[in-house]
Image 1 (tube, rainbow, N blue to C red):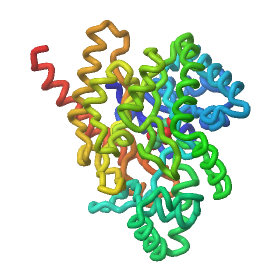
Image 2: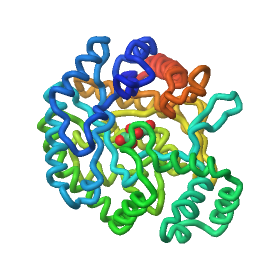
Image 3: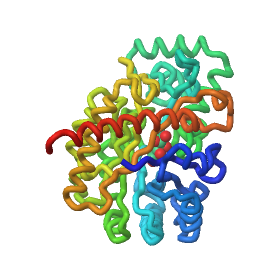
Image 4: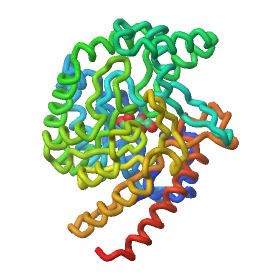
Length: 397
Ligand code: DNO
């Protein structure tokens, strides 16, 4: 696997020199200064590329070229926005940047309720706690119909949780949920998010799924022509939030979108932490099934709880079978090499890391994107990759 590192551009707290020191050879980055929906000019792409290249790094994956909400709704100016998306893919391909991650989550990108969940070893992790989320949705945002989406027990627990929170804690919870996490697409106020949610709940699951397939039919031919592969990122968390439809949460979802638009350029991101937040997603089986369609990997672990809550554990210590997953991915790479693929390696990045040491209380460090925490994760994962490769090369084919 190619070791890569997510970089948020020149104002990231982690420098390109540090990425090189961590041992990664590729960078995962995006042109976040370009508003969602606008074309990424070739010049801007070339500049970012040259900057990485001057450090001996490769721009392995774009994460993300965000998909405008109007494309997800297929309303308003969506045709122009799709044309822009095609042009961006063309420009990326022309500059030699050939892998693009994106998602089709409505309204909110990845979502957590607690960005500073203290672990036993005093480092801090990201956490999604169902009771807190419901407290926000039903009693702070007061979304219409929220009470119908949760059990009476959960609503009771959420009410007591809310009563136990100070005003400052309630404000923090709101910021964590609707103000947007790194790599997301900006933030909402209460009125704005209520209106956006309504549009998508009116559209419903079938409608959103149809819009995803239509979008893929619109852009995959352009990706093929540009020599770019797309890798859709799953919903994080992989279940409905705010009663919103979700269409990239399960193996069934991935199967549907890869078969409906059956092109090698219509690929998947295997985000272990997102798919793995559901116990009914068998990650190893998914790698075996989707094989050559997996174009990008996020390696991360989580500890699940019965009500859907989870926190991000150390890379090797949660509920996901990381050794099994790595082993399945290495087998997939070997198959690609056997089939003559020019670039059999799949880019992976250590996804998220704990905040520890000096970074723990540094407000400039992006939640989940510390240097030390990710480096610890990368080092552990590198050990697994190395060991599994060494042992499996001893096995007869
Ligand atoms: C979180 C990330 C997400 C992801 C986007 C992909 O750390 O996995 O921000 O980049 O959802 O479009």
